[in-house]
Amino acid sequence: MSFKEVKELRKSGNLNEALALAQQDLENDPTNIWNKRSISWVYYDYMKVNATLERYSIFKEYLEKLKVLDLPSDEQMIYDTCSYQIGKILFSIGSLETVDYGKIDEIFELIRNFHFSKPSESYTFLLKAFHKSYKNWQNYLKFADWWDFDNLRPEDYLSEEYNGNKSMSVAEQAYIAYSKRLEVPTVDYDGDPRHFLIDTQQIQSFLPKLDALIESHPEYQYPPYFKAKLLLALGDNKNVLSAFIPFAKKKRNDFWVWELMSEVFPNDDERKFACLCKALSLKTQEGFLINTRQKLAELLIKQGKYQEAKTEIEKIKAARNDNSWKIPNQIVSWSEQPWYSTIQSLTNNSELYRNHLSIAEELLYTDIPEEIVAVEFVNSNKQMLNFVKDKDKHGFFSYKGMINNPKIGDVLRVRFMGEASEDFHKVLSLKKVDEIVDCSALKVFKGKSRLIISAGIAFVDHVFIGKDMVLNMGLIEDQELTGKAILSFNKTKNEWGWKAIEIDKVLSE
Image (cartoon, rainbow, N blue to C red):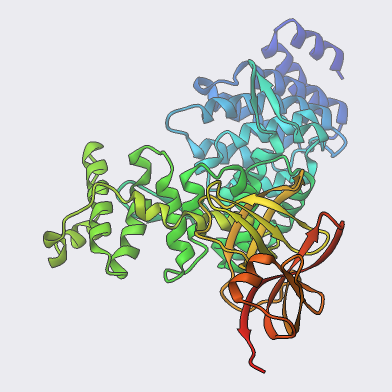
């Protein structure tokens, strides 16, 4: 056995002599593990010097020889060391303008039975190398299942930095790549949809793993987005919105977030329309908006809003012509319909978008419960109002741009943003309540009036009636009254009580 001599020849660069000697040893005793180890390192050296695209065939030859050796499972060192050369050539293949996926498949098949250390730095390097070409590699899912994300190291979950630029962690990249390859709907600029085959069973198996990642790493921005995409692929619209909201909040200024959210709702749902309006209201290059505009135009035509529809269609045509893109058949068909030539388009649909923004934006806060409050006072000049929910929650907020003409006694559904600052609350969503709902800050009262003539005020039981209302209604002592009262804090007495806000009826004796 010439193990030491082979090693010395390798170190001195005499690979041909080292190979000849190692081969002779192996032929003499093919089951001897030392002989196998000896020649495996020679094979490694040959791979190292041939790990280039130009010498791929030679690299592959020695990778095949290493496979044939069929070393036992405890011979991990040689495989771990080889992984860097395997990764090196994979990175070279993945950097080509036209990636040769056949070569990637060949390498994957050759190493599938190698005994790598798991988890390890070298094994992660292998993941990074194969990941380089995941976008159009049809066998990426098969590779990822083989590699097994359970072998990610703690450091693989940390963001990386290279030349001063931060990038997302290896783990986040891997989970995103897996999600994309499960279901990656894309649309080319001809408007023709192309979908990879969807394996619903595989999606269902992967979703719990994606959920675990989202829960353990809430700082990752994109996994919730891809979870929503996968739920959409499964047709699970019921859960997709709650899955998507955390991501949408962070990326609310990107048009495509709203376009994706629109897919959750059926065509006749105003929220779908609103999401498309929100998407088109955001500042974006026209070339990116053509498909969003086409979706909105289709809904506008169904609603008979031909002027607005033509406005969208003309913008689509302009963007496609500017980029020398083909006009889709659907656009051509719409343009040939009788209404198209008789309708004058608008300069833009900005007003249409604005009228629907609140409906879309409210979707971001569906995970925050609404609270029922009553309006206690309105400052229309400043567009501020005082509200009361109960004795524990009350204060004021701005209603600007959210509701029109609120008045005392109105019941509102409100979503609050966090805690108040000196009784000032920030509001996420706000709307008037038209239906009858329970509001603990309001009550109906009925009874006989008791006037305090010196003060010009009155009471019905424990409900206070102010001076102005007494005068305006011409109230008298011991008069049967019915009306509505609001819970109110008396600063003078430092106590809560009820204050009349309207008298619906003055009952006759």
